[in-house]
Image 1 (cartoon, one colour):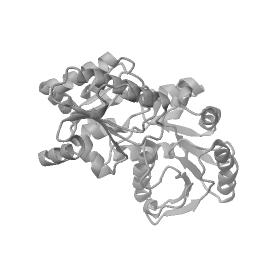
Image 2: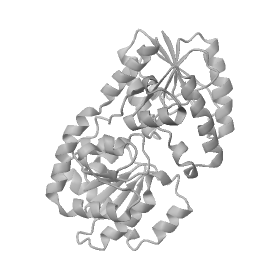
Image 3: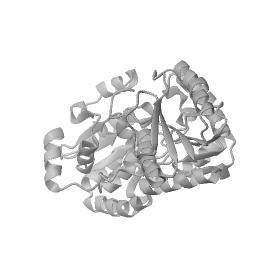
Image 4: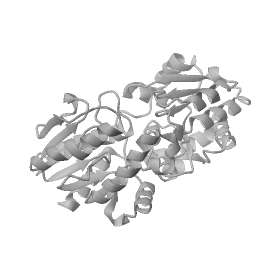
Length: 373
């Protein structure tokens, strides 16, 4: 069987949730199924690090520009022309991007449809493109997959698609994430926070990540903090806007917030594993991979009571209303002062994390593919 794969999210040193899902599942699938031929279709140049096995070929189909007109040209003309002319049996998209003009069987993984619920967080042209085409692609695909029961329900309800057409794969976390030793905790805290304990946030600084309320909650928490606890923010400021800047500048304790930018996986493991807790209070998540990474590092979690987050975190987290600064701040205080609670959350995480692995994700992904063959 010849399978064409949308590999546009495989970009070296710049992968986030969708990219890691593609990387971890595709790597396992192509190695587990050497009897099939996979053609990875890149968008920003072919990365040899992502040619995982001898049964993987690669092609680049641009343009690589991050603009709706370029997307339209690629996905509605260049991509289907290539696929329809080359006798593929299946088109596979691990990030949901597809085409209405592909004439073969299609399987797409739509991780979430946050743009349907928070359009104000996107440029208008981007949001129009997503809302117009993802609905079309969802109906055009022979089968869909997603990464949580919440997203399955949301996609089915919003797009009028039977839940029977959608499989839940879940995400995993890299094996690199594991508990860190005491001397690593000490050296990491010395490097980033002058030796003091800290909360950590991991992710792009997008408005739906609720960074402003996290800042405000931390500022309120600091009023009663006697341990000189810091807040470490891991992620690029790509989405940093005027509102975020104004909120940050209004903080009394802004000097206690440290921005690291993007980190390598090894660095992230050390920073996450050395923290008091992961503070992940997004307004919307289709899954939230940092939740599982924190569990694997034996770090307690503060997360939101919305969308998929309670489903993924289970009882390994303090669940809060992300719109309530008071609730987030109170959870920080509980984590900072209650060692028994921290231990309880870590124990729960050690059980909960067993439900999530990239091996399981890849196996489920392949079972979805088999359903259309």
